[in-house]
Length: 288
Image 1 (spheres, rainbow, N blue to C red):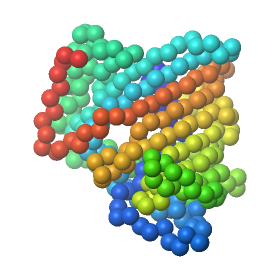
Image 2 (spheres, one colour):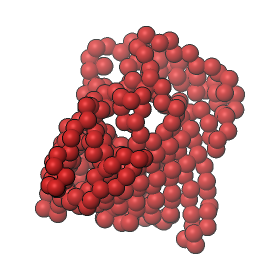
Image 3 (cartoon, rainbow, N blue to C red):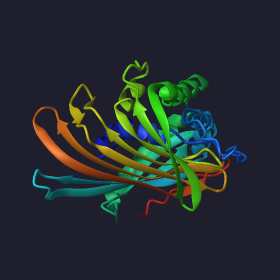
Image 4 (cartoon, rainbow, N blue to C red):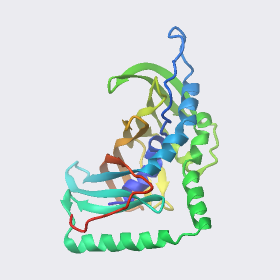
């Protein structure tokens, strides 16, 4: 199950999950009689991305992925979930499987996951400075596509809404047909269109609703997401210092290679955020 959320996530969550906005002193939106420029709002929100991007490295959390697969008649064929504990290990994140279908892992699987964790911890403890620099470079490359967002989309301010009791701008985002994306991820997101809710006081991306307007292929075409696939994404304020993902809902008609069509729904939830101190000792119990 893990492969499908990751593949689809790189298409849709790339646009929303990575577009976190920096917590900063609230800014006044300006004269309410004047309509703010939608592209400028987007630019400001993206310019504040880096601080949240960095602060995410300081948090551990739980991520639960649930996938539901349906046949052509709409009958549920499969439902399964996996829950991961995302840890800070050697300065960057590590996912440890802790539950399947909301049930604790069998003891043998707990030991297996612990052995994998111990092995990875040992490996990361001996990483050279060059290795660490390479990993950090790769991490930064993952968000480089965001630089293309203001040019890749035409933004239009639709109005205002209230999200979690706070005012937010609602902005329509449509890909520019004449834009030639440079980054691979940018090419993917230019096949999306949708709406973005941005907090007026903090320029945070609080909600996204997007839809695929074209077929998108992954893995040399082995997985194809059909037009009409949709995603809803929300994030929340944590510790009064950072905005982090709260949930994502993905609905897709997809084709695996050329043989099998299926309809799938994926719910991803993020919870139990805890700040990880650099001087903390990571202690994980084998009893789950």
